[in-house]
Amino acid sequence: MTMLTEIPFLWVVFCMIEWFAKKRKLLYYTIANLLFTLLYFTVLMYFKYYGIIVTYHAISQADKVTEVGNSTYSLMDPYYLLVFIDIIVLLMIPVFMRKNSKKIQMNLKPISRTALSVVFGVSIALCFFSIWPNRASMNENKQAEEMGIINYEIYTIFADSTEDEAWTEMEDIDQPTIDSLKGVQPVANPQYFGADKGKNVIIIQMESFQDFLIGLNVGGVEVTPNLNKLAADNFHYRNFYTMVGQGTTSDAEFVVNTSMYVPKHEPATQNYVKKALPSLPKLLSNAGYNTATFHTNDVSFWNRTELYSAIGWDKYYDKSFFGGEDHVAFGASDEVLFAKSIDELKKMDESDKPFYAQLITMSSHHPYNIPEDKIRIDLPDEFDNTLVGRYIKSQNYSDYALGKFIDDLKSSGLWDDSIVLFYGDHQGLPVYSLDKKEKDLMQELLGHEYAYPDMFNIPLILHAPGVTYPSRIDKTGGQIDILPTVANLMGVSVANQLHFGQDLLNSGDDVLPMRHFLPTGSFITDSDVFVPGISYDDGTNFPLEYPQDPNGKATKQQYENALELLHLSDSYVNQLPDKEEK
Image (cartoon, rainbow, N blue to C red; front, side, top):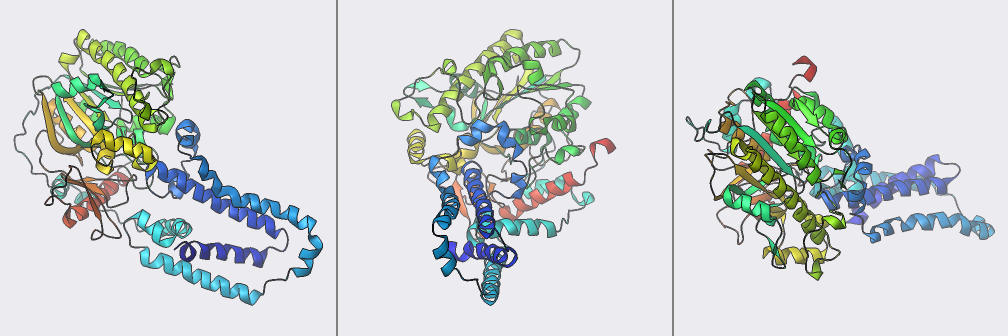
C-alpha cells in the first residue's frame, strides 16, 4: 500500500526537480526529502496525542507547541528519530562523490525527458486513483490510510478551498429542530426549575481528570479521597463525556459556557471568539449575577483574552493575579489557585448580587511531572517511569488541593449557599499515547481493555442545595449539557437562547457528536461510542459497558442526526454577528 499511495507523489516531485533544476540537484532532493520527513514526523507526534492525522489546520497552530514544550516533547519516543536517517545518508553522498568523482562522471547519464514524462504522467494518475475513490469517506484516518499521507495532506488543502459552505439559514435553526435531532422530549414543567434561584454558582474545571479515578484504589490507597466523598454525597454522573477539540482546555471552557459544539478544523478560540456568542455568563448576568473566571496561566494563552470577552465574563483572574509562586506545570499550583480564589469569592459574596465563578485547575497537566514535594501517594513498583503512574500521582495531588478548597467553601458558608459543579476538561491518558506496559496497567486497574469509552469518560459531580443527594446516575451526558442544567436550577429560561445541550435533570437519551479526537461522524449514545469507517455501515461500536448490550448499538439515524447537529452548530455560530456589531 505504501508503494501504491506514497511513492507516486514522491516521483512527481523528483521528476519536477529533474526537469527544472540545472544545478544543485542533490540539494533540492535533500530539501524535498527533509520536508517529507518532517511531515511524517509531525504526523507521528500528532497522532500519538490526538489520534487523528494532522493537517495544515493544526500545523497553523504550531506556535502553541513552544508554550507546552514539555507536554509535546514527552510524546516523542527516541526511535521516532530513525525517520531522519535517510537525510544523513543524503548528506553523506557529496563526501562519497568527491572521493569518487571521476568514476561517477564516467557512469552518470542524463535521464531521458521522455522517460520523465512517462513517470510523471503515471505518477499523477496513481495519485488521482488513490484520492478520487476515497474522497467521500467520513473518516479522516481511513482517508489517509487509503489515499496515502501525502496525498491526503494535498487533498485537504484543495477540498477545503472548494468546500461549499452552504450554511443552514438562521431562520431554519431553532430549538425544536435541535431537540428533535437529539431525541429530547420537551417538558412543560421541568423538575427543579428555580430550585436554587439566587444561589451562587461555582464551576470547577479539573485538568485532564477522567472518571475511572473516582473510587480507584492503587496499592490499597485511595487515589482521589476528596472527590470520592463528593461523588458519594452528591449527584455523580458516571456516563459523562468530554467534547473538546483542538483547543482542549479552552475548548472545554467554550462548550460548557455556550452549549455549542467546537469548530471542525480549529480551536474555538481562533474564529468563534470574534462572534457575539450566547453564553452562561451573559444569561446569569442578565439575571443579576456578577461573573468571574480564574486561571493561573497567562490570559493570552489559547487566545483567552478574546474568549473571555466573547463569552461575557465581567472579570478574569490570570497569571498577573496569581503570580509565579509554587510553580507547577504552566503556572502557580492548584493550592495557590484555590487559596487566592477563595478570598475573591468571599468578596464577591459580600456584594448585594449572587455570583457565577469558574475555576480552571492546571497542576495535573500532561505530561504530569509534578515536583517531588507534591507527591503524596506511593505506588507499586510496576508504575515507576510510566505515564499512568505520573498521571495518578498528579491527580492525587490535585485532589488534595481541591479538598482544602472544599473545606474553605464549607467553613465560609459558601458551600451551603452555592451550586458547586465539578467536571473534567478532557482525557488525560490518550489510548494512542500508551505503550504495551501502560495498556496492561490500565487493563489491570479497570478489569477490561482501556478503550475510547474510558478515555473520553470524565466525571460530573453536582452539588445543589436542597436538590442533590447521594446518587450515582447512569444517564449519558456531555459538557454541552451543563449550561441548560445550571439554567434550570437557577430558574433562568433558555427559551430564547439557542443551545445544543439538554437539561440533565429532565431529559432522557442523549446524542453527543464528537470532534477532532475521533474521526468525523463519531458520536456517543447511551450505549456506545460509535466510530465510522468509510461510512456508517462499516463503523465500529465501542460499548460503554462491559460486556456490550447487543441491543444498544448506535443507529444510522443517530449517525445522520449527529452530523446534522454539527452542521447546524457551525451554521449558527458562523452567521452570528461580530462582537462589535451586537
